[in-house]
Amino acid sequence: MIKKVDHIGIAVPSLEEAIPFYEKTLGLKCEHIEEVAAQKVRTAFFAVGEVHIELLEPTAPDSPVAKFLEKNGSGVHHVALATDDVMAQLDQAKEAGCRLINETPVDGAGGKKIAFLHPKSTFGVLTELCAKK
Ligand code: CMX
Image 1 (cartoon, rainbow, N blue to C red):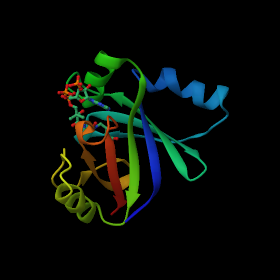
Image 2 (spheres, rainbow, N blue to C red):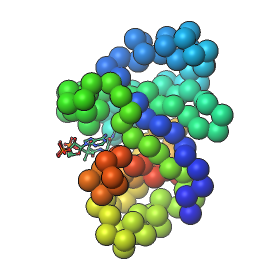
Image 3 (cartoon, rainbow, N blue to C red):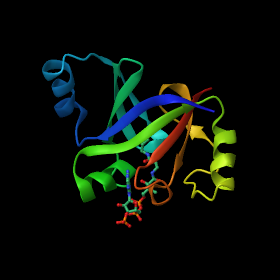
Image 4 (tube, rainbow, N blue to C red):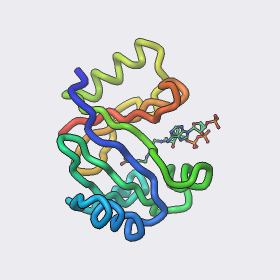
């Protein structure tokens, strides 16, 4: 079952350039910075109530975030929904005819298991399902 919006992913060319906006202009605090090698990104997390903002900086030219930035520039990249069971959620989405990017969960930031649904099946919003391990 989906429980809440976990985080909103925002693509930026550089964490160092973007973090001051969230810290100085908005007064939020950067909780941690983490590289997710499997996704070819460096991430920075800010708590906003129960939801987090995740800034995403590409670490390689073939990172999905590098491709997104090339096409769109900075902006909202994905919405992540928290669930107890990513695999069960993927099975439900597949059964309903949704196109999956990940057939099984993979490792994401914060030690979470994550999987993505294709934006062509989700009315244009890249959708992440995530759960604590
Ligand atoms: N949101 C909405 N639409 C998106 C999108 C995004 N983030 N990224 C791509 N698209 C759209 C493209 O604009 C394109 O639309 P059109 O055909 O209308 O032009 C369509 O999806 C397909 O794009 P594509 O160029 O053929 O495919 P890409 O090679 O760019 O791959 C995607 C797109 C979503 C499959 C790929 O980025 C992916 O696998 N993403 C999942 C992994 C990921 O994003 N990791 C980074 C974050 C990790 C983390 O949070 O830890």
